[in-house]
Length: 362
Ligand code: TRP
Image (cartoon, rainbow, N blue to C red):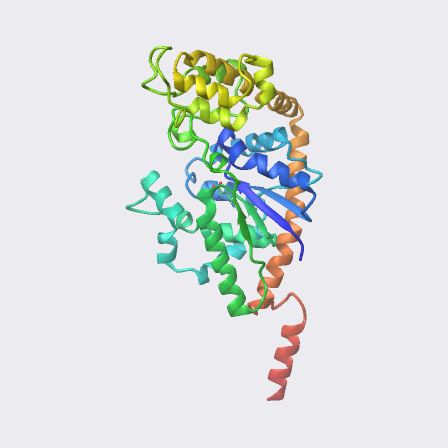
Protein backbone atom coordinates (compact mmCIF):
# COMPACT_ATOMS: atom_id res chain seq x y z
CA UNK A 1 0.00 0.00 0.00
CA UNK A 2 1.16 3.52 -0.75
CA UNK A 3 2.31 5.64 2.17
CA UNK A 4 0.56 8.98 2.04
CA UNK A 5 0.65 11.94 4.41
CA UNK A 6 -2.01 14.55 4.82
CA UNK A 7 -2.01 17.30 7.39
CA UNK A 8 -2.95 20.94 7.61
CA UNK A 9 -3.56 24.15 9.49
CA UNK A 10 -6.33 26.69 9.76
CA UNK A 11 -5.20 30.00 8.31
CA UNK A 12 -6.21 32.25 11.17
CA UNK A 13 -2.80 33.73 11.89
CA UNK A 14 0.90 33.45 11.25
CA UNK A 15 2.58 30.31 12.57
CA UNK A 16 4.66 30.40 15.77
CA UNK A 17 7.29 28.39 17.61
CA UNK A 18 4.61 26.12 19.06
CA UNK A 19 3.61 25.14 15.52
CA UNK A 20 7.23 24.64 14.60
CA UNK A 21 8.11 22.40 17.53
CA UNK A 22 4.79 20.56 17.53
CA UNK A 23 4.41 19.88 13.84
CA UNK A 24 6.35 21.83 11.18
CA UNK A 25 9.69 20.33 12.22
CA UNK A 26 8.20 16.87 12.08
CA UNK A 27 6.71 17.53 8.63
CA UNK A 28 10.00 18.67 7.18
CA UNK A 29 11.71 15.57 8.62
CA UNK A 30 9.02 13.30 7.14
CA UNK A 31 9.34 15.10 3.81
CA UNK A 32 13.10 14.58 3.81
CA UNK A 33 12.87 10.93 4.96
CA UNK A 34 11.89 9.87 1.45
CA UNK A 35 9.63 7.24 3.04
CA UNK A 36 6.39 8.59 1.64
CA UNK A 37 4.90 8.24 -1.80
CA UNK A 38 2.98 11.46 -1.54
CA UNK A 39 2.67 14.30 0.96
CA UNK A 40 -0.15 16.83 1.13
CA UNK A 41 -0.34 19.88 3.36
CA UNK A 42 -3.64 21.66 3.44
CA UNK A 43 -4.38 25.27 4.24
CA UNK A 44 -7.76 24.59 5.81
CA UNK A 45 -9.54 27.83 5.01
CA UNK A 46 -13.00 26.27 4.83
CA UNK A 47 -12.51 24.86 8.30
CA UNK A 48 -11.22 28.23 9.53
CA UNK A 49 -14.45 29.77 8.26
CA UNK A 50 -16.53 27.49 10.50
CA UNK A 51 -15.76 29.82 13.38
CA UNK A 52 -14.69 32.89 11.40
CA UNK A 53 -17.53 33.01 8.87
CA UNK A 54 -18.19 36.62 9.86
CA UNK A 55 -14.59 37.62 9.16
CA UNK A 56 -13.64 36.20 5.77
CA UNK A 57 -10.85 38.74 5.23
CA UNK A 58 -8.96 37.36 8.19
CA UNK A 59 -8.97 33.91 6.65
CA UNK A 60 -8.18 35.17 3.16
CA UNK A 61 -5.21 37.26 4.38
CA UNK A 62 -3.76 34.39 6.35
CA UNK A 63 -3.74 31.92 3.46
CA UNK A 64 -0.60 33.57 2.10
CA UNK A 65 0.89 34.08 5.58
CA UNK A 66 0.67 30.37 6.32
CA UNK A 67 2.01 29.48 2.87
CA UNK A 68 5.00 31.76 3.49
CA UNK A 69 5.60 30.12 6.87
CA UNK A 70 5.52 26.65 5.28
CA UNK A 71 8.02 27.52 2.59
CA UNK A 72 10.25 29.45 5.00
CA UNK A 73 10.71 26.45 7.33
CA UNK A 74 11.60 24.14 4.47
CA UNK A 75 8.41 22.61 3.12
CA UNK A 76 9.52 21.97 -0.45
CA UNK A 77 6.83 22.21 -3.14
CA UNK A 78 8.78 19.72 -5.26
CA UNK A 79 8.27 17.11 -2.57
CA UNK A 80 5.07 18.26 -0.86
CA UNK A 81 1.78 19.31 -2.41
CA UNK A 82 0.43 22.42 -0.69
CA UNK A 83 -3.28 22.99 -1.30
CA UNK A 84 -6.09 25.35 -0.42
CA UNK A 85 -9.04 23.43 1.03
CA UNK A 86 -11.97 25.49 -0.25
CA UNK A 87 -10.73 25.16 -3.84
CA UNK A 88 -11.18 21.39 -3.72
CA UNK A 89 -14.97 21.17 -3.83
CA UNK A 90 -14.86 17.36 -3.78
CA UNK A 91 -14.09 17.67 -0.07
CA UNK A 92 -17.42 19.34 0.58
CA UNK A 93 -19.23 16.65 -1.33
CA UNK A 94 -17.54 13.87 0.61
CA UNK A 95 -18.42 15.65 3.85
CA UNK A 96 -22.09 15.58 2.89
CA UNK A 97 -22.12 11.81 2.49
CA UNK A 98 -20.08 11.14 5.62
CA UNK A 99 -22.59 13.18 7.63
CA UNK A 100 -24.97 10.23 7.38
CA UNK A 101 -22.54 8.10 9.34
CA UNK A 102 -22.15 10.31 12.41
CA UNK A 103 -24.64 11.12 15.15
CA UNK A 104 -25.16 14.50 16.73
CA UNK A 105 -24.27 13.18 20.17
CA UNK A 106 -21.03 11.73 18.85
CA UNK A 107 -19.99 15.17 17.57
CA UNK A 108 -20.96 16.81 20.84
CA UNK A 109 -18.84 14.29 22.74
CA UNK A 110 -15.69 15.08 20.72
CA UNK A 111 -13.32 16.52 23.37
CA UNK A 112 -11.61 18.98 21.02
CA UNK A 113 -14.94 20.30 19.76
CA UNK A 114 -16.26 20.53 23.33
CA UNK A 115 -13.27 22.57 24.41
CA UNK A 116 -13.49 24.85 21.38
CA UNK A 117 -17.22 25.39 21.89
CA UNK A 118 -16.58 26.72 25.38
CA UNK A 119 -13.61 28.82 24.22
CA UNK A 120 -15.79 30.49 21.60
CA UNK A 121 -18.85 30.89 23.78
CA UNK A 122 -20.87 28.68 21.41
CA UNK A 123 -22.58 26.71 24.25
CA UNK A 124 -25.99 28.31 23.74
CA UNK A 125 -26.06 28.09 19.99
CA UNK A 126 -23.56 26.12 18.01
CA UNK A 127 -23.35 26.82 14.28
CA UNK A 128 -23.98 23.53 12.47
CA UNK A 129 -20.95 24.11 10.27
CA UNK A 130 -18.72 24.34 13.30
CA UNK A 131 -20.06 21.23 14.95
CA UNK A 132 -19.65 19.46 11.65
CA UNK A 133 -16.00 20.27 11.11
CA UNK A 134 -14.68 16.92 12.39
CA UNK A 135 -16.63 15.29 9.57
CA UNK A 136 -15.16 17.69 7.06
CA UNK A 137 -11.74 16.86 8.46
CA UNK A 138 -12.47 13.17 7.83
CA UNK A 139 -13.15 14.16 4.23
CA UNK A 140 -9.79 15.98 4.07
CA UNK A 141 -7.94 12.93 5.31
CA UNK A 142 -9.74 10.24 3.31
CA UNK A 143 -9.91 12.21 0.05
CA UNK A 144 -6.17 11.83 -0.31
CA UNK A 145 -6.03 8.27 0.97
CA UNK A 146 -3.81 9.39 3.83
CA UNK A 147 -2.23 6.60 5.84
CA UNK A 148 -0.38 8.96 8.15
CA UNK A 149 -1.64 12.21 9.67
CA UNK A 150 1.04 14.12 11.60
CA UNK A 151 -0.74 16.34 14.11
CA UNK A 152 -0.53 17.79 17.59
CA UNK A 153 -2.13 15.87 20.46
CA UNK A 154 -5.16 18.18 20.46
CA UNK A 155 -6.08 16.72 17.06
CA UNK A 156 -6.21 13.08 18.18
CA UNK A 157 -10.00 13.13 18.66
CA UNK A 158 -10.33 14.26 15.02
CA UNK A 159 -8.33 11.31 13.76
CA UNK A 160 -10.36 9.00 15.99
CA UNK A 161 -13.54 10.43 14.48
CA UNK A 162 -12.13 9.90 11.00
CA UNK A 163 -11.25 6.30 11.77
CA UNK A 164 -14.82 5.65 12.92
CA UNK A 165 -16.17 7.12 9.69
CA UNK A 166 -13.81 5.01 7.59
CA UNK A 167 -14.77 1.91 9.53
CA UNK A 168 -18.45 2.61 9.20
CA UNK A 169 -18.27 3.56 5.51
CA UNK A 170 -16.30 0.46 4.58
CA UNK A 171 -18.67 -1.70 6.59
CA UNK A 172 -21.79 -0.40 4.90
CA UNK A 173 -20.60 0.23 1.34
CA UNK A 174 -17.64 -2.12 1.00
CA UNK A 175 -13.89 -1.56 1.33
CA UNK A 176 -13.37 1.90 -0.16
CA UNK A 177 -11.60 4.29 2.21
CA UNK A 178 -8.06 4.04 3.60
CA UNK A 179 -7.70 3.82 7.38
CA UNK A 180 -5.46 6.65 8.60
CA UNK A 181 -3.20 6.76 11.62
CA UNK A 182 -2.19 9.82 13.65
CA UNK A 183 1.45 10.62 14.21
CA UNK A 184 2.20 12.85 17.17
CA UNK A 185 5.59 14.31 18.17
CA UNK A 186 7.82 11.87 20.08
CA UNK A 187 8.43 13.91 23.19
CA UNK A 188 5.98 15.50 25.58
CA UNK A 189 7.98 18.71 25.38
CA UNK A 190 7.34 19.01 21.65
CA UNK A 191 3.69 18.08 22.02
CA UNK A 192 2.91 21.18 24.00
CA UNK A 193 5.38 24.04 23.99
CA UNK A 194 4.24 26.50 26.68
CA UNK A 195 3.71 30.16 25.88
CA UNK A 196 6.19 32.84 26.95
CA UNK A 197 3.96 33.52 29.99
CA UNK A 198 4.22 29.93 31.22
CA UNK A 199 0.62 29.08 30.27
CA UNK A 200 0.11 25.53 29.11
CA UNK A 201 0.16 26.33 25.43
CA UNK A 202 1.51 28.87 23.00
CA UNK A 203 -1.61 30.28 21.43
CA UNK A 204 -2.53 33.34 19.45
CA UNK A 205 -5.55 34.11 21.60
CA UNK A 206 -3.43 34.10 24.77
CA UNK A 207 -0.94 36.54 23.23
CA UNK A 208 2.02 34.47 24.43
CA UNK A 209 3.57 33.49 21.10
CA UNK A 210 6.88 33.97 19.37
CA UNK A 211 6.08 34.02 15.67
CA UNK A 212 8.37 32.58 13.02
CA UNK A 213 8.22 35.97 11.33
CA UNK A 214 8.95 38.11 14.42
CA UNK A 215 11.81 40.60 13.97
CA UNK A 216 14.93 40.64 16.10
CA UNK A 217 13.74 43.32 18.52
CA UNK A 218 10.38 41.64 19.09
CA UNK A 219 11.97 38.28 19.81
CA UNK A 220 14.35 39.88 22.28
CA UNK A 221 11.53 41.72 24.06
CA UNK A 222 9.50 38.53 24.34
CA UNK A 223 12.42 36.50 25.68
CA UNK A 224 13.38 39.17 28.20
CA UNK A 225 9.86 39.22 29.61
CA UNK A 226 9.51 35.43 29.83
CA UNK A 227 8.08 33.73 32.86
CA UNK A 228 10.82 32.11 34.97
CA UNK A 229 10.68 31.15 38.63
CA UNK A 230 8.61 33.70 40.60
CA UNK A 231 10.53 32.84 43.80
CA UNK A 232 13.91 33.44 42.23
CA UNK A 233 14.14 37.09 43.14
CA UNK A 234 17.77 37.80 43.98
CA UNK A 235 20.61 36.33 41.98
CA UNK A 236 21.78 34.38 45.04
CA UNK A 237 18.37 32.71 45.49
CA UNK A 238 18.17 29.06 44.49
CA UNK A 239 16.00 28.77 41.39
CA UNK A 240 13.58 26.23 40.02
CA UNK A 241 14.11 24.77 36.57
CA UNK A 242 10.85 22.84 36.32
CA UNK A 243 8.04 24.95 34.87
CA UNK A 244 10.54 27.70 34.12
CA UNK A 245 9.82 28.71 30.54
CA UNK A 246 13.38 29.76 29.75
CA UNK A 247 14.66 26.32 30.70
CA UNK A 248 11.83 24.57 28.88
CA UNK A 249 12.81 26.43 25.69
CA UNK A 250 16.47 25.70 26.32
CA UNK A 251 15.56 22.01 26.62
CA UNK A 252 14.06 22.22 23.15
CA UNK A 253 16.55 24.50 21.41
CA UNK A 254 19.96 24.55 23.17
CA UNK A 255 22.74 22.39 21.81
CA UNK A 256 26.22 21.96 23.27
CA UNK A 257 27.61 24.09 20.40
CA UNK A 258 25.54 26.99 21.64
CA UNK A 259 27.33 26.81 24.99
CA UNK A 260 30.71 26.90 23.27
CA UNK A 261 29.56 29.91 21.27
CA UNK A 262 27.65 32.00 23.81
CA UNK A 263 28.19 30.65 27.32
CA UNK A 264 31.55 28.85 27.42
CA UNK A 265 31.60 28.87 31.24
CA UNK A 266 29.23 25.89 31.00
CA UNK A 267 29.66 22.72 28.99
CA UNK A 268 26.02 21.91 28.64
CA UNK A 269 22.49 22.46 29.86
CA UNK A 270 22.88 20.17 32.86
CA UNK A 271 25.68 22.33 34.23
CA UNK A 272 23.63 25.48 33.68
CA UNK A 273 20.61 23.96 35.41
CA UNK A 274 22.73 22.85 38.37
CA UNK A 275 24.01 26.36 38.85
CA UNK A 276 20.53 27.86 38.64
CA UNK A 277 19.23 25.39 41.22
CA UNK A 278 22.13 26.13 43.59
CA UNK A 279 21.60 29.88 43.29
CA UNK A 280 23.94 32.57 42.08
CA UNK A 281 22.77 32.54 38.47
CA UNK A 282 20.58 35.44 37.39
CA UNK A 283 17.65 35.31 34.97
CA UNK A 284 19.35 37.85 32.71
CA UNK A 285 22.13 35.39 31.89
CA UNK A 286 19.80 32.58 30.90
CA UNK A 287 17.49 34.91 28.99
CA UNK A 288 20.33 36.43 27.02
CA UNK A 289 21.56 32.95 26.20
CA UNK A 290 18.13 31.82 25.03
CA UNK A 291 17.74 35.01 23.02
CA UNK A 292 21.00 34.32 21.16
CA UNK A 293 19.89 30.78 20.36
CA UNK A 294 16.42 31.79 19.18
CA UNK A 295 17.85 34.63 17.08
CA UNK A 296 20.18 32.16 15.33
CA UNK A 297 17.32 29.76 14.80
CA UNK A 298 14.74 32.26 13.54
CA UNK A 299 17.01 34.52 11.46
CA UNK A 300 17.29 32.24 8.40
CA UNK A 301 13.57 31.43 8.54
CA UNK A 302 12.67 35.13 8.65
CA UNK A 303 15.09 35.97 5.86
CA UNK A 304 13.75 33.23 3.63
CA UNK A 305 10.22 34.38 4.38
CA UNK A 306 11.11 37.95 3.45
CA UNK A 307 12.71 36.85 0.19
CA UNK A 308 9.64 34.78 -0.68
CA UNK A 309 7.32 37.65 0.10
CA UNK A 310 9.23 39.68 -2.49
CA UNK A 311 8.34 36.93 -4.95
CA UNK A 312 4.74 36.43 -3.97
CA UNK A 313 3.61 35.41 -7.45
CA UNK A 314 5.77 32.34 -7.10
CA UNK A 315 4.03 31.46 -3.81
CA UNK A 316 0.65 32.00 -5.44
CA UNK A 317 1.64 29.63 -8.25
CA UNK A 318 2.79 26.99 -5.75
CA UNK A 319 -0.64 27.06 -4.10
CA UNK A 320 -2.47 26.99 -7.39
CA UNK A 321 -0.45 24.11 -8.82
CA UNK A 322 -0.71 22.17 -5.56
CA UNK A 323 -4.46 22.66 -5.39
CA UNK A 324 -4.96 21.48 -8.99
CA UNK A 325 -2.88 18.39 -8.28
CA UNK A 326 -4.86 17.71 -5.09
CA UNK A 327 -8.17 18.07 -6.91
CA UNK A 328 -7.27 15.18 -9.21
CA UNK A 329 -6.72 12.84 -6.29
CA UNK A 330 -9.81 14.01 -4.41
CA UNK A 331 -11.90 13.54 -7.51
CA UNK A 332 -10.75 9.92 -7.86
CA UNK A 333 -11.75 9.23 -4.27
CA UNK A 334 -15.11 10.94 -4.71
CA UNK A 335 -15.81 8.78 -7.76
CA UNK A 336 -15.02 5.63 -5.81
CA UNK A 337 -17.21 6.79 -2.92
CA UNK A 338 -20.15 7.54 -5.22
CA UNK A 339 -19.77 4.20 -6.95
CA UNK A 340 -19.74 2.40 -3.58
CA UNK A 341 -22.86 4.36 -2.56
CA UNK A 342 -24.57 3.54 -5.86
CA UNK A 343 -24.96 7.18 -6.84
CA UNK A 344 -22.73 7.12 -9.90
CA UNK A 345 -25.62 7.34 -12.40
CA UNK A 346 -23.89 9.18 -15.21
CA UNK A 347 -20.28 8.31 -14.44
CA UNK A 348 -20.37 5.22 -16.71
CA UNK A 349 -23.08 3.34 -18.60
CA UNK A 350 -23.72 0.70 -15.96
CA UNK A 351 -26.81 2.46 -14.66
CA UNK A 352 -28.16 2.80 -18.17
CA UNK A 353 -27.62 -0.93 -18.83
CA UNK A 354 -29.31 -1.79 -15.55
CA UNK A 355 -32.45 0.23 -16.22
CA UNK A 356 -32.70 -0.97 -19.77
CA UNK A 357 -32.52 -4.56 -18.58
CA UNK A 358 -35.06 -3.85 -15.86
CA UNK A 359 -37.62 -1.85 -17.81
CA UNK A 360 -37.44 -3.73 -21.06
CA UNK A 361 -38.14 -7.04 -19.28
CA UNK A 362 -41.65 -5.82 -18.63
N1 TRP B 1 -7.98 20.94 12.53
C1 TRP B 1 -6.64 21.26 12.17
C2 TRP B 1 -6.17 22.42 13.07
O1 TRP B 1 -6.98 23.08 13.67
C3 TRP B 1 -6.47 21.66 10.72
C4 TRP B 1 -6.86 20.58 9.75
C5 TRP B 1 -7.87 20.64 8.84
C6 TRP B 1 -6.26 19.29 9.61
N2 TRP B 1 -7.94 19.50 8.11
C7 TRP B 1 -6.98 18.65 8.56
C8 TRP B 1 -5.22 18.62 10.24
C9 TRP B 1 -6.68 17.34 8.17
C10 TRP B 1 -4.93 17.33 9.85
C11 TRP B 1 -5.65 16.69 8.83
O2 TRP B 1 -4.99 22.67 13.15
